[in-house]
Image (cartoon, rainbow, N blue to C red; front, side, top):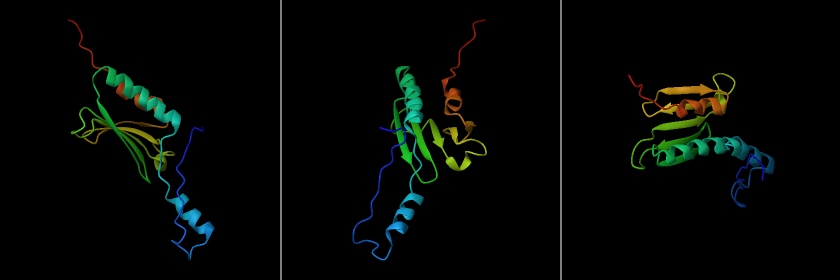
Length: 130
């Protein structure tokens, strides 16, 4: 298995009979969704596993769209996501493809390296003893 696996969509046999084979393939490839690669998903799920073990997170959802891929983290399944980890290749050359967004919509961290972006979620608040 490779690090990047995509689902191959094939048009129906009778649908789009006026389209040539090349134009059908081009149309399908231009509308392919943005996905997390296997190493990216491994990093995200490692963080998720640690947070579940600590009792902070309980559920997640993954959404693959044309513009971005989103990994949402929930405290409970019925609530809004606590954090969203997004991959947007359109921003890769500017601010970085990866971002962590809080429930309020505030972007906590954005960058080119997923490990550095996820580090913002690793930090825990500790009380100082006086």
